[in-house]
Length: 243
Ligand code: F6R
Image (cartoon, rainbow, N blue to C red; front, side, top):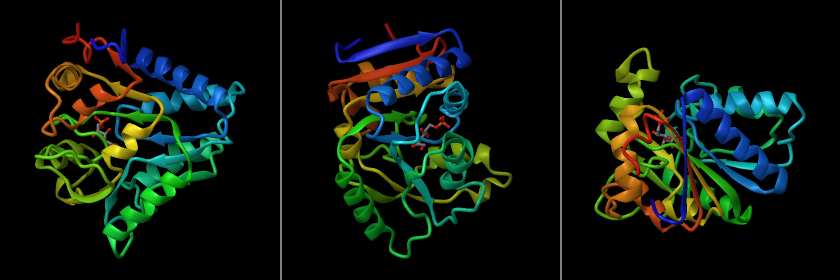
């Protein structure tokens, strides 16, 4: 492993979630009013549940400002498939977080929305921590494999692989949105610390490729090898191909 990457290979998903939540809660304790980057997807669900438990025990998350990585487009915030809905229900309401931001899935001009989102993010100051999952194809946020690294926030078509992976959340796979708004790699890389979560043997190959393979836009997460402070919290299955 590289020196800038700290790896925790936990016994299972529950242990991974507890570890990640502990790291996040500790960071918030040290930086209670900073900006933080949040991810959706199935991987951080357990971590969010654990944060709610810690909140019940007295941990305070109410002073932070949050920025989510991405949102489908077009999608309304009250659509149960929207990331807005996911975050409000699982994270913001239960943790009492009021200063939250997501790209607007209803924006009439999605490219302009990306520029505005990036400005909002820049004005919020340095993110103390960016939580990330990793796509089966190595994407972070919805920065999909490409010939070049996508620096800026963008209105992007989802890769076929991502549409297929995310169809598990939809009753009708044909309803998976084809486009999304995503934070770019520059904003992700500017976070002071990255907390990358990965679970299950299906993520083992791509995690190893991202963290120890060549740095290439074909595996967008491989850019994290250039970040000075990355903490990877994985379960044993996802970490199985990492030395
Ligand atoms: C979600 C996001 C995505 C997911 C990735 C993994 O906001 O930005 O990059 O982190 O697709 O998703 P799961 O956790 O469902 O395997």
